[in-house]
Amino acid sequence: MNDIKLAGVPSMTVNALVKQLSDAYCALIAANAPVKTMPSVMLWGPPGIGKSQAVRQIADVIRRRTGKRVDVTDVRLLLFNPIDLRGIPTANADKTLAVWLKPKIFAMDESDDVVNILFLDELSSAPQSVQAAAYQITLDRVIGEHRLPDNCIVIAAGNRTTDRAVAFKMPKALANRLMHIEVDGSFSEWKKWAIGKGVDAKVLGFLSFHVDYLMKFDPASEELAFPTPRTWEMVSDLLKTVNSDIDEMYPLIAGLVGSGTAVEFRSWSRVFADLPDIEDIFDGKKPAPPKTSDALYALISSMTAYAREHKNELTRIANSIRYAAMLPPDFSAVLMKDYMYLEPGYRDKLMKIDEFVRWMRTTGSLLNGSV
Image 1 (cartoon, helix red, strand yellow):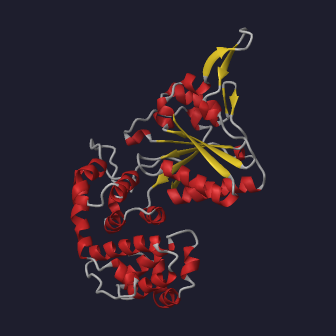
Image 2: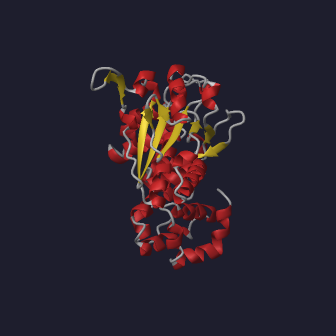
Image 3: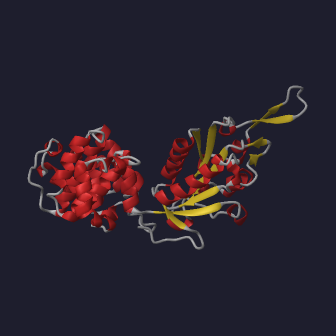
C-alpha cells in the first residue's frame, strides 16, 4: 500500500503499533511507574494513513484496561509559533519580573486516576523554529518554566518529506530525542477496526472487493482528492448521517476520494439493489445467495453491518450462520472472521452458538487463509 520507507525505522500497521504502545504504557501504569519512563514517540506516514486514529485507539485501550480517565490534548504544531508554546509574558505581582502564563495545553489533571496524552500532530510540518521549541517537550518534558505532569504521555506525528506534503526535515537533535515508528497500511487490520467502528456497509463491501483502493496516495500526483483510510471514513460518515444515496452524494464523495474512484464506487454499489433481504436472512429464511464475487462481498458487508446492530440477539446471529453455509466456503470464512471483529471478545459469544461450533468443525480451517 505504501512503497516509500524510512531508512532504519521499524514499520508497523496501526493495529500493531496500538498494541505495542498500549502494552508498554499499561505495563508502566500497572507497575506504578511514571509513564514518562517511555521515550516520546514519533509516528511517521503519508497523509490519511491513520496516525491520529492510532492515538485515539491507544487512549481507548488504556482507558479500558486501567480504568483510568484518559485525556488527549491534540496540538497542531503547524498553527503554533515558539512563543505560543511558552505562553504569554506578563508582570509578576510586584511588577519587578516577567512571568509566563501557562499555555492551555499544559493545564492537565495530575491526579493518580488520570492519564494525559499530549499529541503533537503535524510536527514535521511545523517550521524548524517550532520544532526546536519542541526539544524540551519531547526530552525534558518542559517548555520554558512549565513542566508536563508525570502522568503525561507524549506522542508526535507527521508526514515524511518524501510524501511531498507540507514537511520540513527534522533536525537530528530533535530526531534523537524520539522513538520513531513508521505507520504502514494493512487492509485486513483496517477492516477489523472499521467493522468495530461501524463503517458503512457499502464502503466496507467496495474496499473488500477492491482492496487496493483503501490507500492510493501518490506523492508525485497533483490530485487533491484521493482515497485514504481517513477519506473513506469521511465517506462513511456522509452516507450514514447525511444521505445513504450514493448517486445523490456522488459530488461530495468525489471531493473526498477523487472522481475516478468515486465513479467506480458508485457503479459497484449498484449490486446492493439486487441483494437478498438481510432481515429475512437473520429471521431464519433462506433466500438464494448471489453468484458473482462483487455481489457476495456486498452481501457479506451488509450481513456484518446488520449483525453489529443485533450482536446480542444470538438466535438471529445463529440464523445468519446457518445461511452462511449456503455461500461459497471461502466467502463464509470471510463472514465468520468479520463477525469476530464485531466487538472485543465476540468470538467467545460465537462459541456459545451451536451453528458456529459446527461451522468451525467443518469449515473453520479456512480462517487460516484468505480470499
